[in-house]
Length: 250
Ligand SMILES: [Zn+2]
Image (cartoon, rainbow, N blue to C red; front, side, top):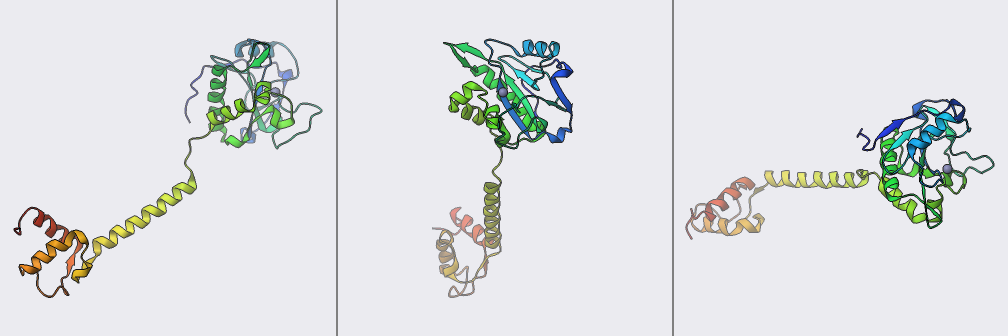
């Protein structure tokens, strides 16, 4: 697994903010959130959730220069099952990791800055790798229960699609790979057949060898009427090379 190219601090939350232990193999989803604050930081959030008992939590907070882990992965954080809202997919607190992005306000509107977005992508890719979570199971809080979170990515779907593009796996398309393998096998067989090929008739000689063979028959180095030549591919190649080197004259 690749290393996380982002400083990651640990500041575990007040135990009143999160749930029970689970198996790491339970982790199947990653949920993106936003804090909705103006200019907050991952470390600031880490401190707040460590100190206060608020009955809510997320595993990670991320900002423009670092990330803070607030709940250990093997514990259930209370982040995406918003009470009173209908669940829209299979994602639950119990089977997911919650990632909160710090936010800012510009001209009265909440934004996730480009740097924070890039860092969130780094963190999420690292977690996807660690727990084998596919791109399809990286979702917004909005996709879990309809809550407008992260609001800038619900208001502007394009931002969300950009993020999805950032975390897309540069993996191998297995179908494409199988096609290439079949193509390679075919070429290999063709090549082997060609190497074992023995030309008996003049008509069977490939174009690149015809002039040479014709010349050798004419000089009576090769005998007959062109019916029993018995020239292998390798021999033909050698004869043509010799011809090109001028060994048989013009
Ligand atoms: Zn949320």
